[in-house]
Length: 470
Image 1 (tube, rainbow, N blue to C red):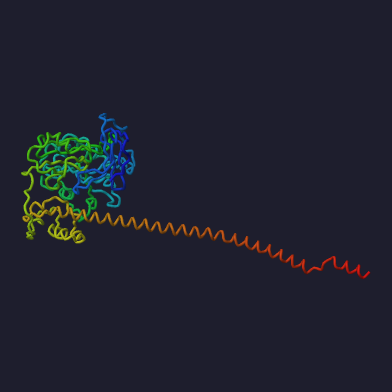
Image 2: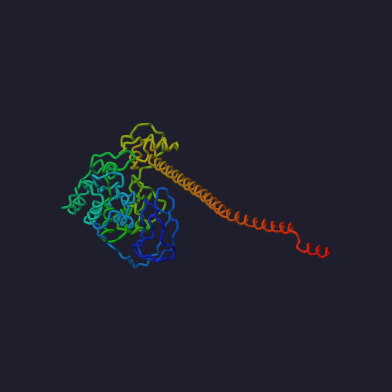
């Protein structure tokens, strides 16, 4: 989540940062248009949890006035400076995960040298064509962004994976890569070949470790749309304020639209000609990994690559859930080589530790197991539930740890203040003692003088005696 930099009543320009990256795994947010901020509040957002999130609401003035854009020469910048440019531009993975790209462009201690940089041009699901359209129309810009990534990572080879049913995209990217040394690799059009770990295996024959990352085997992977936003940020000084999104399914004019972030889904559907009769469900993402939305009055986010208006024919018919018959069909189709039925049993029983023992977080939620299950068990929903519960528990642990640290810091501060007060009192004590001794010494001197005076003979007595004798 980003930290808001504006408040209600502020005027903002297009491309102005309105949310600052809050933490290492975070990305900046920018105004998609110029206008006046009318609210900074929690509102519904497209997310599987259905929970609201903090949003900045802008009343557009229609002028589209940009901030001063400042392109940079990436060859002259230190790697950390260049990564900071990308971080401040709000660049994240646009394939759906929305993970901050600046983090992935910093190898850190993962590997000494990157063997392979992969650009993912394989659509992650059926129905989605936004990357295909982008490669056809912006191949030069994509390759320009790839140059920046290759400059930062210095890989031994650069591979571009594109599904073999996209001849126009392959042709455009091949032409743009002439003289670069980058290699175009067509991959089979088979779901889920666009998933990162599966694509890495297809292109390099390397297995990503269980619950590990591709960088652990010397490979890093980025989406083609991410490369294009890197080009816009570096060569044009533009942050991420829009993306290409597929609007398809039961709409009058399906297509791909370059859309400003924050645009309500309802307006996007209207741009596609509106809903046709018979829409059963609005899905963000594809038919396999997407999730249903409660309303179309939610904003477009960086993670939204597709809006699917699904009819009854395009949805898997709802069937009564039956007990697992241990047929093993889910195991046969799992691209991550997991044991879906074991994960299901432990997730259902809320045995989250055991689910993690079976590598719950290696599940890519592709939906293959749910699709083939003869008992119609919504397996992926159980996995998502288990993951969310584990994340919630981790957050609670972090909050508790933070509270413990604050309490400990308070106790240490109170103890420190107590010791400081005692030290000050000890410093004052010797001075007081010296003063007391001085006063006591003075009193003794006076008393001694008085005593001596009493003992000394009176001088008038002898004189009187002498007169009497005379």
